[in-house]
Length: 516
Image 1 (cartoon, rainbow, N blue to C red):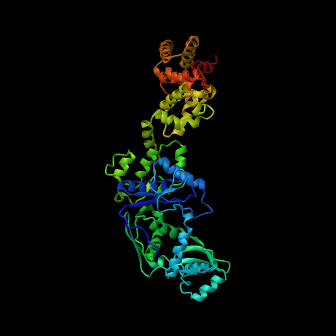
Image 2: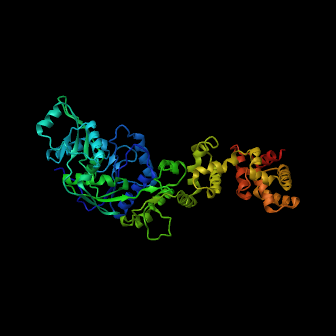
C-alpha cells in the first residue's frame, strides 16, 4: 500500500487554486483562513496548483494568483516559488500536472485490490440510465452495472480499445466525517454512487491511455501524500467530501479534519458576483485598495472575534484572534462600504510617499516617468496626494479629484447647475473681478499669505459673507464650489507652475474665468 503522511503532529494546511481564472473574494478568504490557522498553530501553509484542466489552465493565471497572494502578504512554506523559478518543499511536485504518474500508480493499486473497477458504459448508456431514473423518480446515480464484469469481458473490451472510466466501489455503509464548523455529517452510500476517478482511459493493441484523473481523486491523493491535516475550503465542496472520504478509506489513509466556510453573498443576499462590483484581488488592486484593508476585511467575513466592537486588526492581531471554532456556518455578507471604511483608515495610516507611488501610473502623460522625475516633482506630488486622500475611498478616485490642477475648463464649470446658482448672484462677479485685478497687479511668486490678504480686502469691498466670497473663487480655481482650503491649494498650484508640469497658474485661471 502507498502510504500517506498524516501522522505528524505539525498542522499542515493548503490552498489549492486552479489557474483557470482570477483570485476572487471567496478563494482569497479561503487562502487567508488557511494562512492564519497555520500561523496560529505554528504549522505549515502549502500552496498547490491544481492545473489538471490542461485546456483551461494558463501560466498567466498562475502568475497572477501567485502575485495576488504575495500582494496580500500570504507567504507559503511549500509550493511554487514566488519568482516561478522552481519549488520549495520536500513533498512536491506542487503542480498537479507534474504528478500524473503518481496518480496512475494509485489507480493501478485500487484496481489490483478490487476497490475500483473499469466502467465501459458509453455516454448514451449513462444518459439512458439517467432518463429512466427520472421517469421512475429514483436518484440519478450510476447503476453499477460494470461492477461485476468478468476478467474475460474486461480483457476483451480493453483489446478492442473501448474507452472506459475507472470508478471507486463505494462500500455498503454510510460515509461519515466531522466538520469543525458544522459538526458530524453523514451521507447514505446510495446517494453517492460509484464516483469516477479517471475519465477517458483506453486499452488496445497500440498501447494503454491512462486517461485523465478527476478533481476529487487527485485532490485526495495530494492531500494525503502531502500530509494535510486540516482541509479548509468553501462550503460548495461539502458535496465532494463523502467521495473524498471514501477514497481515503479505500487507501487506508487517515481522514483529515474538514472546515467548510460559508458562502459570501452580496448585500442583496445573492451569491457575490461581478454585478456587485469588483470581486477579484487584481480588480481591487487596480482600484487602489490597500492589501492590509482587504486582509482585515476578508478575515472578518464569517469569523467571530472576542471584541465585536473592534474592526481594525493588523495581520498579527488577526492571527492571534483566529480560531476554527469561531467560524460561523451562516453566510457572510460582503459590504463594500465597510471595506471602503477600512481602506480609508489604512490610507490615513500610510505615508504620502507610499500612496503617491501607488497613484503615479494614474497620471500617465501628465507626469514624467517616476524613475526620471526630479525630487522636487516627487515632493510636490506627495503633497497633492496627501491633500486629497482624505476625500476618497480608494486610490483610483484620485485622478478625478485632482484633474482641475492640470486642466480647468471655465465653460463647463459655469454651466454646472450648483455652480451656476452660486455665480448667478451679483456679488459673485464683483468678487472674482476684484480678486483677478489684485492677482494681475502682483509681481513675483504668489504666496498663500498674499492670496489670504486679497480675500480679506475683496470681502470688505464686495460686502459679502464667507460663503459668498469663497464659493465663487473655488469655482474659478477648481471648477467646483467646494474643495481644499486656499492656504493649501494656492501653493500646490503655483509650485506646479514653477515645475513646468503644465499646471495653469492662479492668474491664468482667474483671467480665463472672468474673461480677461
